Amino acid sequence: VQLQASGGGLVQAGGSLRLSCTAPGRTFSEYSMGWFRQAPGKEREFVAAVSWNGSTYYKDSVQGRFTISRDNARNTVYLQMYSLKPEDTAVYHCAAERTYPKPIPGPVPGLWNYWGQGTQVTVSS
Image 1 (tube, one colour):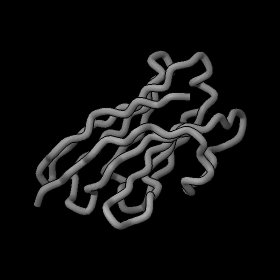
Image 2 (spheres, one colour; image 1 turned 180 degrees about the vertical axis):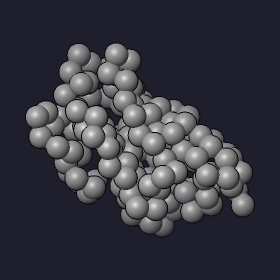
Image 3 (tube, one colour; image 1 turned 60 degrees about the horizontal axis):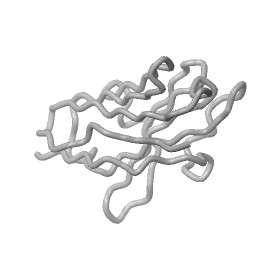
Image 4 (cartoon, helix red, strand yellow; image 1 turned 45 degrees about the vertical axis):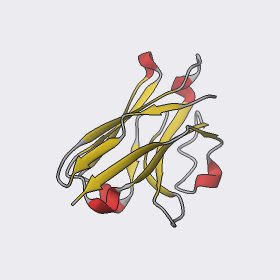
């Protein structure tokens, strides 16, 4: 599964961005999709995930500011980010794991097998 992420950029604090990740293939609807991020000098961390059935999960610090969604007709997952903060600055990676009919793999990067190349999000203060 080849994932292609896009939508990153430079934004001022309080601004918004929408990330997209496409995954070619006919079984996209059977995959859980996730977003992780990695800031310089830090470990990759879980941000949000959406299961094959649409259930969503969020890191506590982004709950209420970020929204993950999926469009199975377009094989695409989105991460809409509002009220961005400088601490949200990182390279954002999308991840996929075929989990149907089970829930998402969990918030640990090692549990996800497929990764995109990452897109840089920079939030200036």
